[in-house]
Length: 184
Image 1 (spheres, rainbow, N blue to C red):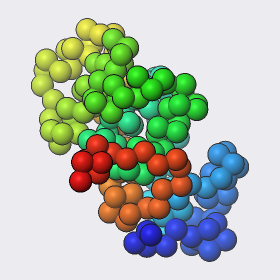
Image 2 (image 1 turned 90 degrees about the horizontal axis):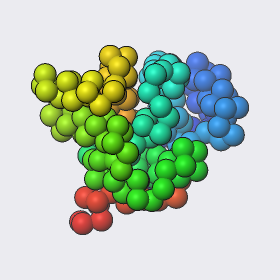
Image 3 (image 1 turned 90 degrees about the vertical axis):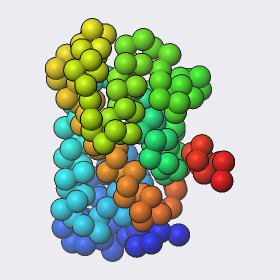
Image 4 (image 1 turned 180 degrees about the vertical axis):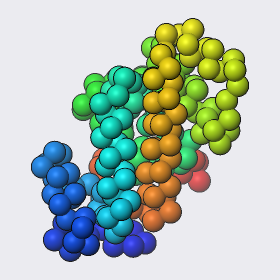
């Protein structure tokens, strides 16, 4: 059970209701992540804006999902790992071998591998990167815009990981257990 309410649209704060209605229209449902963040209309608006802007960015959708899977595993977030495994399989069409590689902080795609490894290094190192890290991304073919977006996706996914773990958001996707939780 979540530590704070996950209100339905009609019970959410008034300023959050049109935002949740837009999520419903776009996705066909309102996942619990959006409902729990709706307790703060400002946080929901910020999250939707950040996520929406990055969705129109230079970084390819499969790479964004690979990063989300890796960061969910790093941060031990069962909700996000479950949600992004569902998205990876059903929307970006990543296969199980790729999803496993992503959860391990890598990718079977050479270019995506550089992005995922960099994202994991950032998450584990609290944002620290070396000149060599940036040079490796550029050498693999990432533009400056894509490098900034990789960093932004780490931040965005860290936000959702922290919200879902701190508030114990009820998982409303097929459950995928993080490695840390499975070992416990």
